[in-house]
Image 1 (cartoon, rainbow, N blue to C red):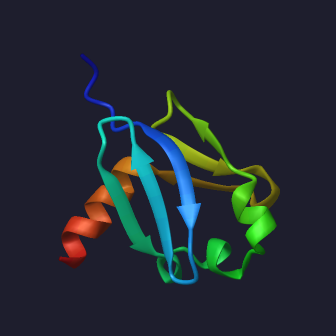
Image 2 (tube, rainbow, N blue to C red):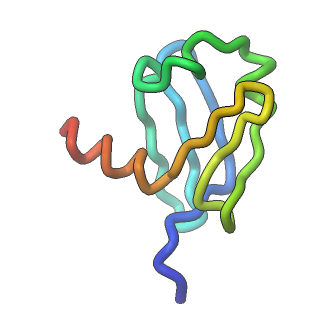
Length: 79
């Protein structure tokens, strides 16, 4: 079994980026942590794709990449 943290869906609300993981967990982090995402339109935010065996998220239009593992790390550090 791989140790990769893999995403399966991404959702947004006014304040948070929510990533649903393959193992059933949900990571929610403030959009304010990701300036390019915070400034983007909802349509641009919805235009994402998973990369690196679903362990990262890419917004090609923004030239922005986000590691799901780094989201977990930031979430734990903020707690």
